[in-house]
Length: 284
Image (cartoon, rainbow, N blue to C red; front, side):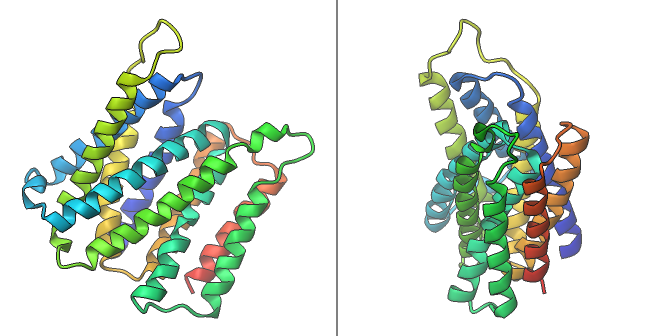
């Protein structure tokens, strides 16, 4: 059952990246950006409710606390990841973002006595090397083309925080409040995104345009958060997160080439190769 859920999570994670990339194609002002984020989180919230209509009724004080923090970190992760995708190649953005698993992997060894051997250390070193390599550009490239790295790194750190929070909640006595935990998170993210949409000034006279991609990205994000949190309580961090992320990385590379006609540079291909090597080593 875990394998099936893992494959499903890879599909959803890839869908989230691809649809997030599509929703910011072209010029987007701040108001349009926040409006799309509002639609994304609202879609995620509806998707979670669709999985369990009584999700909110099971919320405890501890679940509300974890959910609120998860919501804030989710906002940081999604907003920064969207900005990174608007400037950088899908495969590299997905790779750097996926390296957030480093944080729950290390915390799993420190707080939950999960295995952390020499291979794990080597894998982490290779992962860091991949991140560094992804920041380099060919001589022909303009330096602004690597501007996606900073928001990508912030999104990566936030992604790691999400993994730790998922683990904390699923290791607590309130792990049965999984749906409620995510409902609180996505509800908070939806409200904050709506407020930002309302207070942001439009950069032109046109109102933010409605499009389907934020809704699709949000549906993928909401359900994959549900599946990932469930798996976090069933599988070791050192196995779950590396395996999940290598699948998303490979799928995003293929999607970037086919859908967005991206042509990875040599440094980016080296970074991608190192990324795969890192995850393979970490999964040993």
